[in-house]
Length: 239
Length: 137
Image (cartoon, rainbow over all chains, first blue to last red; front, side, top):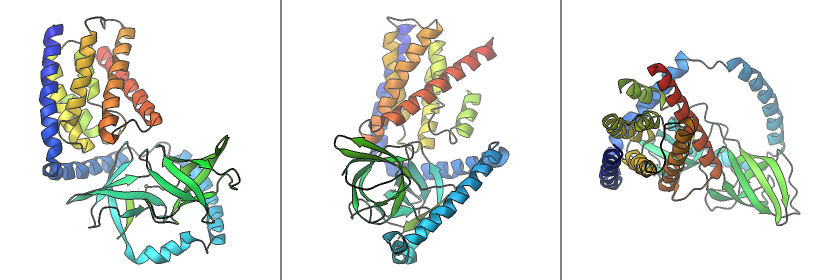
């Protein structure tokens, strides 16, 4: 029995190795199947949302109202920084903004969305103008967005005054860490963190807020909570 | 088999961190049902490829390799007892997830994400195996 099972599995493994190799070489051929799958998964998600409306809805309603209050405060703060780059980004990019429906969000942070005919490398934002990520792959019917939830993404970050904080690295689960921030840099919990320079993302896009500050022997380590949210089922791309 | 198929098609899109097809596959592995193991491994993993938008054969490749490795363990350790099954599940998931992350990113980029996947999958597989054996008795 042991031998038969091992032999069977070994044969399947060898066949799958060949099959996977051929398949990864001809990924474009599978795109129509994937497109059907993405649309089907969207239907299933919508179906479950209708059949089983969240039981935690009431709990979250309360939370939602609390958050609305916090948001109002944040908006006030945003007003105070009207002259900073966050606002000027709107004027700069608004005419080029185009929306796309989300088809699927996978567990590693990749977002599949309908393709509104944009190019690879297009910047993706949410409805609140917060940075979501970048288009990493285009296919005929859908596009793949590498969101900031994908671990290991690196880009320069700045504080609200546009001063460089350091190189930020995404660590999945909605957080970003910035290591080796100069000890003299003044930063507080809940401060906004923006993109800096023009390395991976254009400067001045809102990324998140400071959640934790750790003092280390090399300076400060800042943990940033990402602010983008995809509940609306839409993302916005800068064409 | 049909039940597993329905489970996979209707629930997998909702749970992105759990690989549902591994439940029935590991169940057949422990029950020594070779035909069912082969059939479910091939069919369910191909459907999982389509759901996860991976090149066809991706999940078959990593799952069959991981199962092959734990098959070798059978020479030294049985899996009659629950604690032995746990050892098998742990080893299988570590190998499987290592391959999954390595082929997705080229390295293990986040230990937090790895741990999250490991815990979720082991819990799901234990629940699946326990419910299946309860339904059979």
